[in-house]
Image (cartoon, rainbow over all chains, first blue to last red; front, side, top):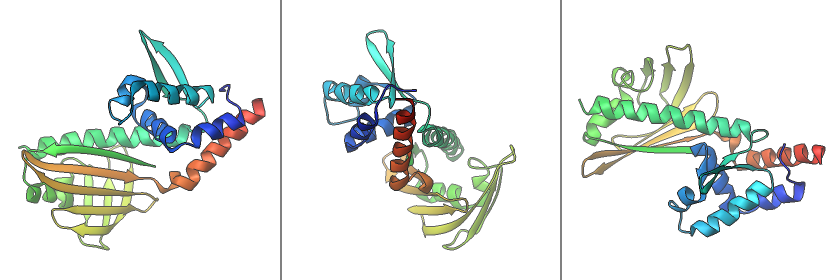
Length: 105
Length: 119
């Protein structure tokens, strides 16, 4: 279980930017602040700050990886939604690769 | 909640459209066995070799531009084509209504309750 308290969870998810970060991390499996900032019109520092809030609330799990911290969505209540995104995303990656190959013939 | 993916296919939109709407072509990339009546309101049946089967109704069909299928079990998939320099950009958005905004809030509430229980 995460260490987050109720208020932390609601505060953390109350911000649309943080919600979209959770969705993005769920879609990728895991991500670093640098990877996420590369796709967003915000600085790495701003993303890192939001990720810290989400991790503090127990919504993300942080793992050190070299100089960077990788974040993944905490298993548990969000698991079904996350599993759906991961499964459907992977299925479309495979299908679209096949579509590209068949159309190229 | 939705998943969005895109790919550029090195073929013109009319050829890619055939891959999206003709059963034989769909069997090359989407599912192992396909039946599809490609018109608005038309029905589709998609079967995979692992035993999975999904049925759908065509909600929108705008030739060489946009195809939307509503899955019988809920959710939908929209596929849009756009001509680009090196072929056709195919953009897919699959949505899961069971994880729509209101339900995401419920997930958050469940999360909060779960954490409250161990606090």
